[in-house]
Structure formats: structure tokens, C-alpha cells
Image 1 (cartoon, rainbow, N blue to C red):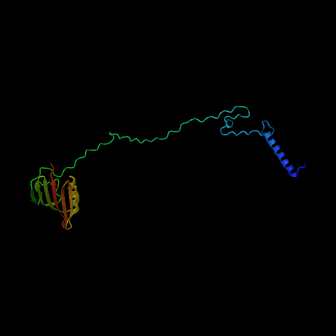
Image 2 (image 1 turned 45 degrees about the vertical axis):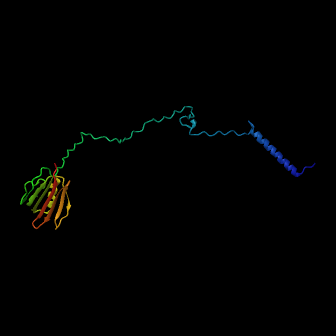
Image 3 (image 1 turned 90 degrees about the vertical axis):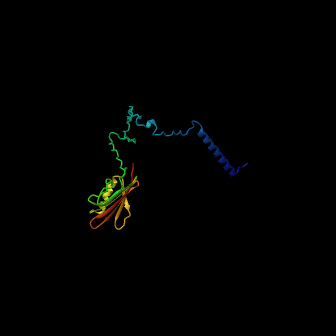
Length: 223
């Protein structure tokens, strides 16, 4: 039976496939010729002992000396700071002087009620409410009804209104009585010096030859 051309082509392809399969099988057998040697993975140059300069052997055969290791020198100590508060030495701190209490304006017993013209009346608390230096006293009086005391004084001075106000400011501050502005009439200046219900009102009026002034005080005696 005569084979067709197509049959010959198919038979040739089949034979070629068989030969290729055989060649692949032979190449996979152990010791087969032409088999490529297994490629060894490259060693890490950083971790390989042979790559270390200290372990390398010179070509002359002499063993290389290991590189000297760095000395473990501790770091220099830095400046240290502390948050601890050190108490002051009591012996080095000067002691404060004891404070002196401010005296109370008026104490019992109270003077008898009286009045005078042209001078200071007997029993007037002139230490508390002194006569203005260089002034002329016109009238003065005291009226007592324990424990209450009232005093008054009028006078004239060649000084200014400011001089009068400042003089009594300093005098009454010694007993803790301090001034505040008070209402006044007719161009006069009025201030009130007070402490703990005790008060002295000063009214000063400028004039042609100086200043006229009037003092009126109310106190409550202590003791």
C-alpha cells in the first residue's frame, strides 16, 4: 500500500519528538556528559572569613597578624546637674528684727470735757493730733463720754494747703491712720485720716496771708 505525502510528514514529526524526548532523558541522568556543574552561591563578602583582611594569608606563606582591636575606652563623663534644693544655712541668713506693733490711737482713761480759745485745751491729745509747727491755734476742745472721745482744733499758718495736709499725714500715720479725699466747699481741701472706726477730718482753706485749717476727730478708746 502506498503511503501519502501527509502520512510521511506526520511520521517524521513523531520520530523527531521521540528523539528529542530521548535526548532530554539522557541529559538528566547522573554523570551524563555535557551536564553543567552546579553553581555555588556566592558567599557574602562581608561575612566570609576569607574576605577579612586579618585572616588573609599572604602569597609568601607567612601568617598575617590580626589587626589590633580598639581599646574599650569609656566615654568622658559629662557635667551633671541636680534639681535638689539645698536649704539655706540658718546661721548665714540674717535674722529679721522683730516687728513693732502700731499703737492704737486712743486708750482709756479719757480726759474731761473742756474747751479753750487761743491755745491747746488741757487734756487735748496733742501727741495724737499735734499743733502744726509755726501755726497759731484759734480754738481747741475735747468732749469725752467713755469709751468715745471727740476733739477739735482750728488755726492759721503761713504755709500752704499742701504743707498742712502733709504734716498731719505723717503725724497720724504713726498710729496707722491714713488719708483719703473728702468732700469740701468753697475752694477748700479736705481729707480724712482713718483706722478701725477712728477718724480725723482736716479741712484746709487758702487765704491772702496763708492757710486756715480745722481738725475734727472722733475716737473709740481701747482698754
